[in-house]
Length: 104
Image (cartoon, rainbow, N blue to C red; front, side, top):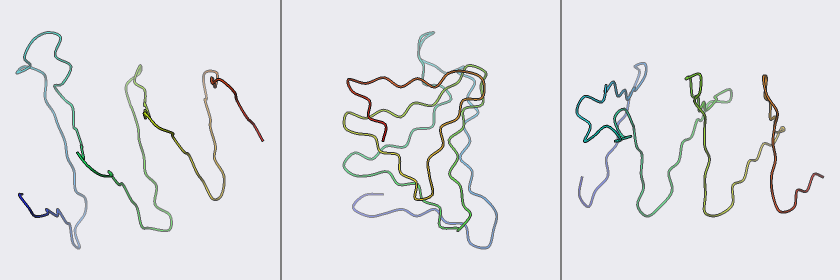
C-alpha cells in the first residue's frame, strides 16, 4: 500500500501461515543464498512480534542439524525476563565472550 497501512487478520479462524517452498530453481546463480528466505524489513522503525495470551510463547526455531539462530545488532542486545532467564545447551558448552563479563 502507499501512504496507508495493511492488516492481515484471522477472526474466529485458525492460523495465518507464510510458507516459502522455493527449491532454488530460479536463483540468479549457484552462489545466490536467497532462495527459500522469508524477509521482514522495516526501513524506518521497529519490527514487533507480540503474543497477548497469558501462556503464549514466541518460538524462534532452526530445525536443521547444523542450523543456528543469530541475534545481531550494531547497538546493544537486551534479554529480559520478569520471572528469570534460562540459557541451556543440552549437547555443548555455553560460551560467553566480551571485553569484560559481569555476573552479578
